[in-house]
Length: 228
Image (tube, rainbow, N blue to C red; front, side, top):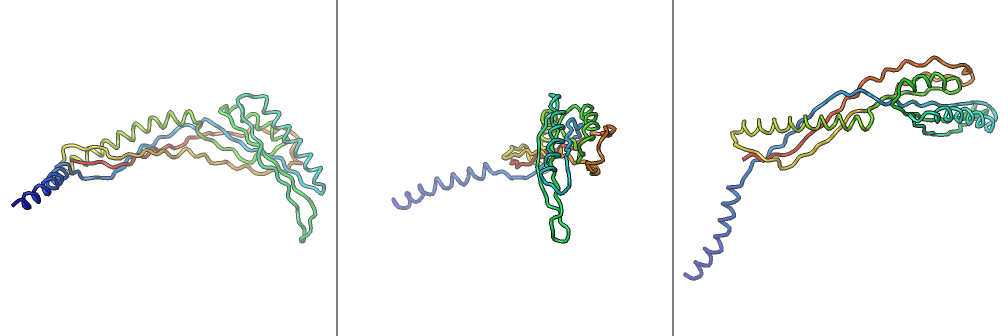
């Protein structure tokens, strides 16, 4: 009798735990929602380069250096423009497996939110440099502002779906067990420009036509809810 009582006492906590687990049981559902918006591109990025070909590598390097230095100095006059020099390359030119000359090339990148200023400067810079590409993007400040609005919209859409799921399952309530927020979009794509021989550049070129366009930003919200 004493052994039977001990066994029953040992089983009692297990039965209590099982009852509590049954009472607190939730069905888990994974769901997602998103919000997308279009934002005006407010930043322009242009890449220009100097290139020279000939038989004397040192003379070619000197020519390229002078053109790049000239371009960088022109842009340093403007606080609204960021300038960054990029790759510097010297390539051999082959004819029937023999080196018959050299090609020297260097480029720099300019970035600004003053698109009218950049457009006008590009016309002047192309008198000695070649325009490789132009691209447009959304500035970090404008992106953050737009994403904050989209986050609110995506979370509201997530909540609407969660309520719909709970109601459709005939449940009275739900709780969010896990949630993730991710942003994407806003990529900018270069607009290529035809390469021009450096020797043909001696006069100022008309300013290129610029259309910044828009970027698409998306906020994705995914997570897991527990419905009672």
